Image (cartoon, rainbow, N blue to C red; front, side, top):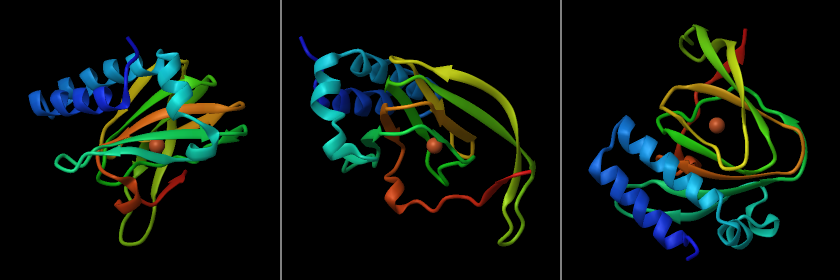
Amino acid sequence: MPYTLEQLSSDIRGALKADAGQAGKQAICALVSKALLDKEFIAQHLTADQCKPRKVLYEDPELGFCVCGHVYPDAAIGAPHDHGSSWAIYGLAEGDTEMVDWRIVKPGEGDGPSLVEPERSYVLRPGDAHFYDVGVVHSPNRSGVTRLIRIEGSNLDHVRRSRIRAA
Ligand SMILES: [Fe+2]
């Protein structure tokens, strides 16, 4: 039976209600992987016409998390960033993506940016989902067409990002 957006959203609600901490986030990664490997789900929701580059597919009225679809048409080297006060889960459906984790070497003061250095890199492949907690600095490097399901802890349209710069 195909995995639907309604079922994914409902399962994420259940996971967060059962455990809003690390265990809940890891449970969501498994749910996202299930959706990523469902060809019908991907074909229906991760379309370039609606997700270029981001579309909120579902926003939970109570818990505030969002299920987003992303389609990036081109290769790109991402800048290091966090998601302000929100956590996020990146789930890759198409297009191997190198992710870089960065560590903060000098926290920002006042309006100044935090300075960061690359710490490690790894490749997300179709079906992989990775949790980025609040304040974790990361950057994606895409080598071509990429499609993602990204879960945002809260809608990033309304979240102020931290100022971050590579040292
Ligand atoms: Fe990100």
